[in-house]
Image (tube, rainbow, N blue to C red; front, side, top):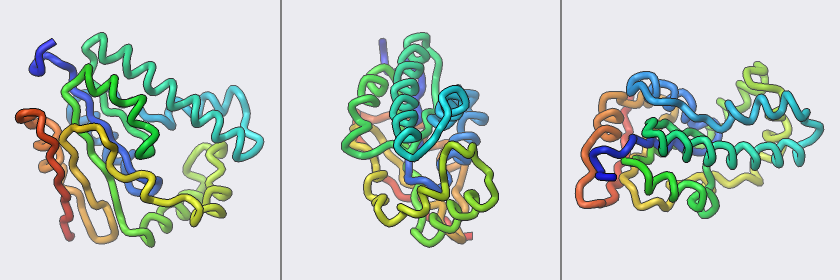
Length: 199
């Protein structure tokens, strides 16, 4: 399959609380792509299987990643473009993503923000109960310092990569992100860009 005829794949990643889900939703809607988000698969699994503790939640999370990779494979093989969103882990998630990248015209968008903002966002949604209770956000907060943000750095996928800072006082430029995502890849070169737009 030629590069021009490959389905589009946008991998949106970043640590929890960096705004990746919000950005992925906008990209999928604007580009008319299927949004395949890990938590959208994880939550019905938690409904069906129940979550008693963090270890069980983590096992369901691992199964959710496998579902993401499987469904993404089927979709790309059917020429269905995707926005793929999860808190992928550098050094571990590449094995599941590389076969998808090989099937697609792929881009990576990495959401980052300062640690104070990230923690405040996560604590706020835990307090409000915005998410499925099976995520056990309060327990995650208790172990916050044991979860290094470096694990969610840009993935080693050899594809064009854009780093978007969503921290306090910054407004991501959707037009710039869209130009990056829809740009023509040149000579397989990996582009590393960081976008910091102050409001």
